[in-house]
Length: 627
Image 1 (cartoon, one colour):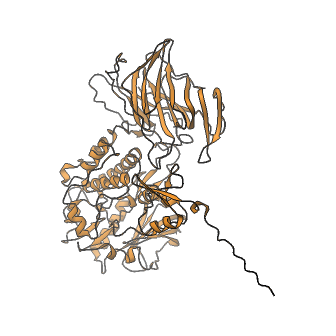
Image 2 (image 1 turned 90 degrees about the vertical axis):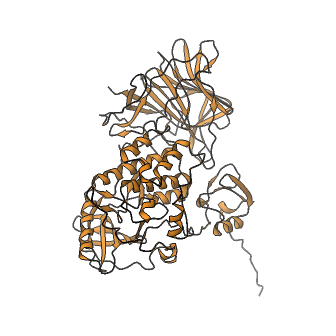
């Protein structure tokens, strides 16, 4: 009998078959084999947020590459600490660097436990059914000290009642609270069950966020904490892991691609009436909170107020913008000593305005921080890329500033408008709904001359449905698949799309320059001239062109924002026509602003030269003037 030996090749993951390049903080290395890439990840020399590419053209987060495993971060002290010792190492907080070694058997009267959702230093979160109301909730158990006193148990019950009174869209709803039947000495909260992920997980998965999104998340958090503070509740453990991100409900006034924040985990919250002393930090040396995000005064047992939460929110913004917390250390004492010096300042590409505000929020002296949440929100709204950041039940509100006529000399630039808060991508679907209603707030303008006009979002229309070039006219306008196998509009030459007549409007495009060497976008026109944006080479400018005349820039050309690693190639190009002025932004960077008296935006006209461009999304929105 003849024995045949058959050697079968082991199939390899097609995503791991080629050589790889990595981008770690702007430094590209490689090529590496799949085995070398895997070894670097396992050894911690490749972070989940580092870029990975097989061709150095398309980059993805390393966390999305199949087959890679990453070690747990070493002792970042990002877990909640409830300790009487400041010489506490991270390993003593969580067994083996993770959650509790075993999940205790819990019995809570009136609730049926369905599943375990997670575990941490202070307890376990279960998925449970509240039998009386037949609804599914998140049931969080909270560890109480051994032999808890009657006063402590009563205080916990009072706090459960106080937290249940918090009614705010950005705070997770607390339905019930009390003591477990078993084990004895363990308390519980029954809370709203959320579908999404926390901010820490989001940053770990996708990397640092852009400033626009980060500050809109911070603004929601500040609004929630303000509501809590007005009801006598100070959180004391604000951090990315306690900010849960969910999809905003239909009609909720948030820009597309910006998730809704739910502030969670009030397990360490301080509940007291105004002026009441802190009764839960009277023991010397007690540390309550998460060291790398805690305000310095929380380490010393000093009386804390809302400014401690503002500090922690600043540290959270720092983490979101950089991908790491501002402080680290292997012990609470080490972190505490580092916080005796000012927090590290955010560096470019983060803007100076963001760096200044984070530095103010994280000032060592509480008196140097924003004095309250109203002050903080006002400072957030004043950031140049948020255009006032005002969102109400009527939707986004646009404020336009007075503007002098177009200067005939490019050396005399007019004021630059603040950009309208808008999505970076996917501007369709819920991007702009027909939101017309009552504006629930008054915007004060501190301009030197006159009060600006105020506009609310009106009816909208999609200019590209993601399927066909219907409505577009031009030499060759087609729909093709891009590198992500997504249908996009593509053309070279001039293409036009009629717009619905409106005195005031906004047009937003998800634009990829692709192979085009120059792009010209007409914003508005009248009988004698047209106003347009020109993007050519590495510069862009907004200006006017009279019939038969040369292009007259409203201000000197500005650099075109580069496409950052891991960023989509589709950047937002937006322009507004409001009150006889035109203004444009590219990737949230101002292009320019000019008077356009008598001009109308009757069509979208784009010219691409040198090669085709691509459009992922396009939206036209009427802006309704608010009287």
